[in-house]
Length: 316
Image (cartoon, rainbow, N blue to C red; front, top):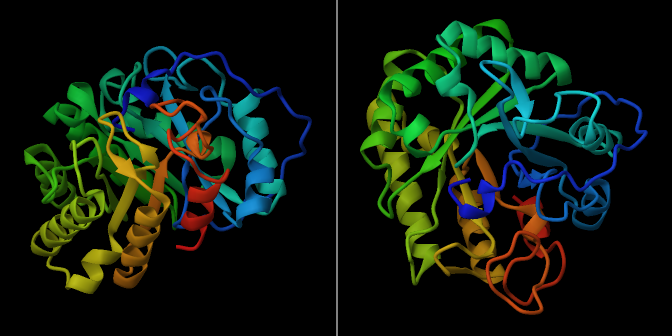
């Protein structure tokens, strides 16, 4: 996530390893808010699922554990730790996960893997470890999003992933302006077409604008993305909307923008009406009220019911 709240990638993990048996994955829902095991007092995902009806989570973040080797937060093994236990808990409750690679900070795989083939191999390790049906590449900052060589490496790797994993859903998540993709976002889309990367959903993060009207700016950004996708790939508006995703930020953003529950409900309803391909937000860890307000890792900064944003998202 393009947020200082996502920058704490080396935090000590707050969930104990649970003795949960492995379960077969369910179908991944397009409504999959972010959950970060190593940060922000992570809740029990099965309890959140029971209370809200949400079935899927986007799990943050897979980084480089050294060179081109993937690791949760760059420090926890792919298996045998709290992240695997959390995934098993979600699957045992009838849900599934979308691991997210990258984010705003930390040592990422894109710059550390030397070729698309090596990077695809790192993605494949995670896919194989969890028998995944979808992955999210959260491409941000100057080391990945604004590095054209790394952009192309990521897209080339995703092309290989699509070739080697029948039916897998690939998502790229990136920042935006209030009217659609900036230069680097436009380039990412152009190169996805040129390299035949086969990206299923292009997800924008419409926040941290300093916006006074986050609903209008979110819709404007998503419409701009839809128009860019339609013109680049030759899709109809309906087809292009199906490849658009939105990943918001609940409550107060880093720029003190307000996304209230009513606003998020309106964004969800607009996204449903247009047939968007994904709805997420940062993060379930923050989907709780804050007595003192402010931008926090474990609460939204506003007065709300616990898990209210997740409940709305589940209705997508």
